[in-house]
Image: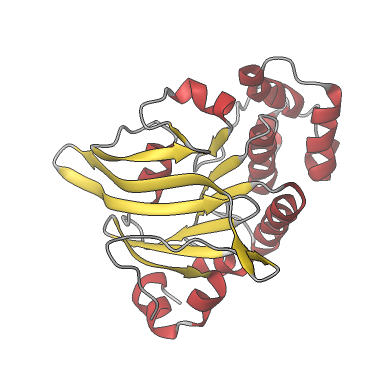
Length: 257
């Protein structure tokens, strides 16, 4: 079983002429967060790189959602720091994150039910200021299903369509780092495969960095480059997704398959 020591995360690397090359867009260093007396994160360290999907895995209560909420500023840490492209953003406001290049898609597919698909996208674009037609067209090209329903009220969408809408809304911000919390929750396997396949295409084509929190470890590892396993708020393992997928002892111990 591959393990980290002192919660220090291994970063994935590419190679050019035999020399490792990495672009760490997001670095989390010794991050701890608490809800009252309960410590949800305990010294978590990891990195997420350009052109990579980093999957954060673990059982319910492991601290996965708290990790994303702390990175994006929704929860203030009691220790540690968050660095985005070399800038310490630990104390930055939630509202400033989009401008800094980070978008957070929380669990729950939060759309404004009374607004149309198109209006939901435009609300998401408000934080960026003026957004051109080409950028809206790009989202609709990525998600043809929501393009077909652009004039429909969001409450008429299926769960998969709502997930496509909230991801598309986040992409309008042109993030360098995309935080995704449980995008597969409640969706049919076919829709999950479609969404994860699209994420893989975006990462490969545009160099986007995705930090993906998932309960569905098998699906997440199938699309990720790196896996980080949390248990009770601590990093217990960080390794390549393929290595974690092949580690039967680890999968049984922490990932449930």
